[in-house]
Image (cartoon, rainbow, N blue to C red; front, side, top):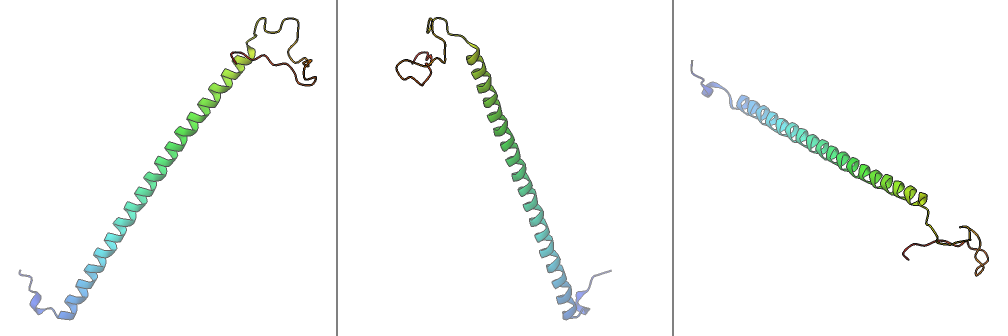
Length: 104
């Protein structure tokens, strides 16, 4: 059986052509919207991963610094100020405690 479009009226062809064109436009818009949602989702995922890595790095640095400070506070310096206690007021200022500075 042959498809003969010569017997179909012009108005009917225009109507179905318009429906086909509208379907193609709707399909294009749906694909574009889906692609935009995928790109936004990937951008959000990459942002969350990057922020998590940076936050973990900052926490690691802070923990290391805290451990270093606690270790440095536990170290006693032998013979820096013989006969004097750390925190005793200095005779030159009268109010400020004497501080032991290393390699300054």
